[in-house]
Image (tube, rainbow, N blue to C red):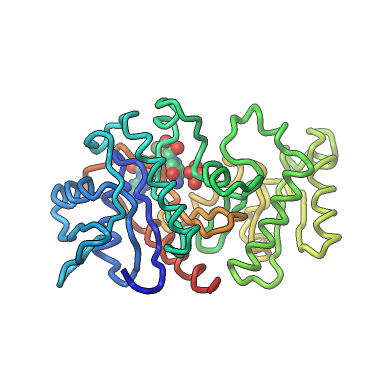
Length: 326
Ligand SMILES: NC(=O)C1=CN([C@@H]2O[C@H](COP(=O)(O)OP(=O)(O)OC[C@H]3O[C@@H](n4cnc5c(N)ncnc54)[C@H](O)[C@@H]3O)[C@@H](O)[C@H]2O)C=CC1
Ligand SMILES: NCC(=O)COP(=O)(O)O
């Protein structure tokens, strides 16, 4: 390993496309300095299956003299993983890779965490309540509120609520949740992204941002006052803006991020505009975490056609954020 701390990358669900895109990252981007936190035998098996010329070795073993190498911080699978077939037996492995990678970053032995996709359902089925990396990492870091933000070329979307049933969303749109999300987003856009005075467009919750109170009360009673409190502190936030018009291209040229109230209000637009080249960033953590914009893609796992573009963009963004933080 180089003297400067490298990225810690978790491939995520072993039955998904995570292992193969991490191998592609090692093969196609030798300029990236990273260690994969995973089972090295899984990576060797996938490298053989796809005929990828990547020498997989443990951290303390030598890299290949020529050609591509992948260094692994070893975490053993509970049972061999078959591409495309989830097993609850390996859910603990997935969480262990995350814990170990976070420990690396928090102790300064890695510069940032980059995560591959996990399957939330199988982790829950195995008996561990898990709604997503975002919430799990907030718990590990002991932080009450973090913000999920996805960034694609030309569009960033931050979310007030993350993985919640739609039925529970309106109750989670509280004055504190909206205000803290705006503040964290503005702060991290400044500190982590170097945007001196971030401009935020905050969406309403209801159609037409409540249509003057005739289509729901949250927009005027909760979201507007939260925006005003942030504005009073000099944050350039506007809204509540009706979600159906906020993403009109001319409007987007005037903002650095859209703050959406819930997952499926903001992310479909983001993924439509930039799937494959977008990055998921957790704002508000005491360390840098970026991730892919896609899931485990079990339907194509093991077929050798998974696109590693989002993983590469996530790693490159984590590197530049880490460099800026030095
Ligand atoms: N960062 C994370 O850990 C994320 C995890 N997930 C999880 O992934 C699981 C599956 O979610 P889905 O909704 O099916 O979304 P998905 O992103 O896994 O798949 C949606 C479609 O996109 C395709 N696709 C996804 N990534 C691709 C890639 N890199 N290259 C080529 N094609 C790709 C898939 O083959 C599929 O047809 C769920 O359990 C979900 O919770 C979903 C999003 C992010
Ligand atoms: N749709 C994005 C997503 O679900 C990723 O969640 P997380 O695992 O990064 O919290």
